[in-house]
Length: 119
Image 1 (spheres, rainbow, N blue to C red):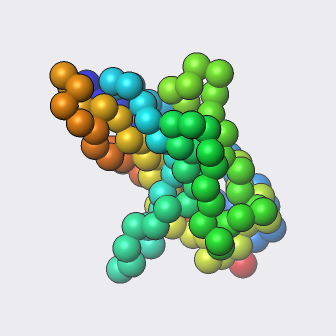
Image 2 (cartoon, rainbow, N blue to C red):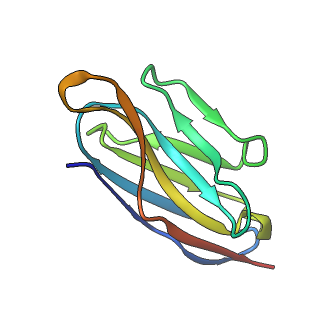
Image 3 (tube, rainbow, N blue to C red):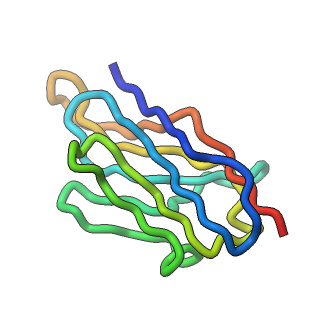
C-alpha cells in the first residue's frame, strides 16, 4: 500500500525558516521530493531528488530551499529558509514508485501540508 505522510507545515513570518518532513511507504521508490499548489493555480515542482540522487529545484526557490533524503531513503525533507509570502501554498510530498509486479511506475502525492508566510 502506498502512503505518503507529511508533517511540519505551519505559519511563519517572512524571512523565517521551516522544515517539512515526509515518510513514504510503498514499493521501490524512484524519484522523491516536494511539489506545491496555490488555489487556482497548477501544482508545481519545488524540489525533487532523482533515483540517481540528482537534485532539481524550481528557479523561485533555488538557494533558499534544500531537499534531502533521510538515511532510510524513504524519508524526504524540505528545509526552507528566507521564506517569502509568495511561498504560501499547500506543499505535497511526491514520490515516483514502481507499480506492483514491476509493470511500470507512477507518481504519488501525500495529502499536503499548509505553509503560510506572513508579511
